[in-house]
Image (spheres, rainbow, N blue to C red):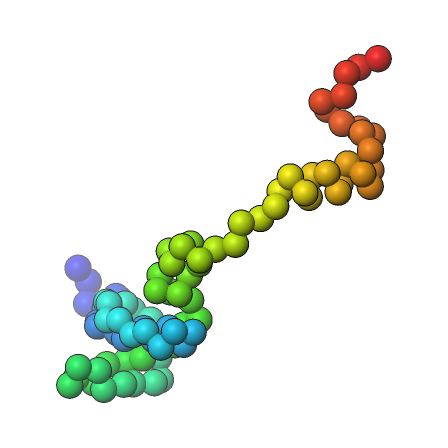
Length: 88
C-alpha cells in the first residue's frame, strides 16, 4: 500500500445518546472529542441511534394500521383511476 494516502484507521468509541450506550469499533471518522473508556483514551463519536436503541432491533416498533389508511384513501378518492377496477 502507498504511504500517506490512506485515512487513519483506529479504535473509536461510539456513544448512543438516546440510551447512554457506548461501544468500541474501528473507524476512520474524524472527531475532536475524546473519552476515557475502560481505562484508555479514545476518540468519541456521538450518535442518536444505534442497534441498542433502534426500534427494529429492540422489538419496540409500532404496528402501522395500513388497512385503515387504505380505507381512508378509498373513502376520500373512491375508485378513480384504480388499476384493480374492471374496465368497462
